[in-house]
Image 1 (cartoon, rainbow, N blue to C red):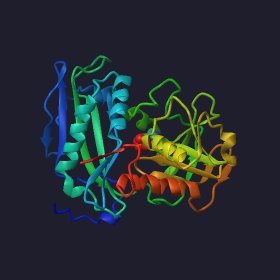
Image 2: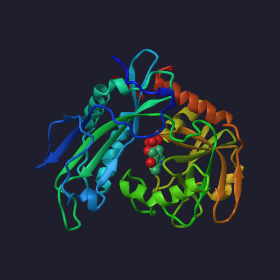
Image 3: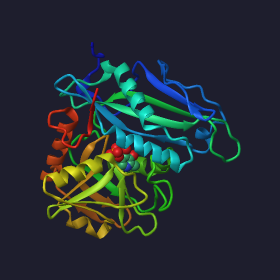
Image 4: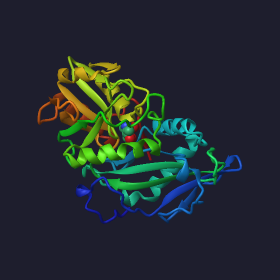
Length: 338
Ligand SMILES: Cc1ncc(COP(=O)(O)O)c(C=O)c1O
């Protein structure tokens, strides 16, 4: 298979066209055939509920090229289940796991020449997307849904790569309400976070660190990533109903246990920040972004964690990447080789 002519080692986390995407409609109570398209646009009714009432959910996952020339997709079942939860959370038709699986495999295989070569640090980002495509004027769920999957080759999410970043606590913005949609991967949460995210960037930070919306006492999550801290041989990560259950975080918790660390998933009060030896943001896009500094925009408090990635974060990062690339044995059955 001839590779696309791209500067693989210098890709950023940005959209690039590939050759094909796949689509499937749910109409009259059933899913249709998976269609292959070479167009990067969709024909959508102007009264589609996705456009008016935010009936939209998506996923983000990656495929990796191994040294052995095989393509590996990481923990697809988790993404499939999370999309089902998101769909149910905003009254959309859930995509069956098997349809999800065949759609992502097809989208990756059709665009094989865009899977970045082993050793470039880049990967093929997979973006499944489910939208309410049926027209409504009244506030009601649609009667038609469109499920699509496109892929795009990407480099690191934060321009810093695995170098530590600064993040900013902003108390004047809530990304999600305590009993709202924060635990679903739906567009509305991201719309709510755009203002504080752009402001954080403008003020020199990689992301905004959100606190719980009710009391502003506990850490929620860091922009498009979960938060973790490490101290006393323990991996600590927030338990909260308003954060996205990160698949990377879940994987790191398992790897931390495998390495002999204790794992605590519980409310993490802001006052605990000075006690961590290492702090990181984790997610599909960045795997781990070590955090060197947290600044509280409102209180002026500053927490420092050093300019170099911590030892445990570094071990976790390399371990997870080695499994994804196929360099280390996949003991937990996380990888689908296609
Ligand atoms: C809000 C939010 N939190 C956390 C994550 C990390 O989740 P995952 O590790 O499943 O990519 C993401 C990215 O998907 C996200 O958008």
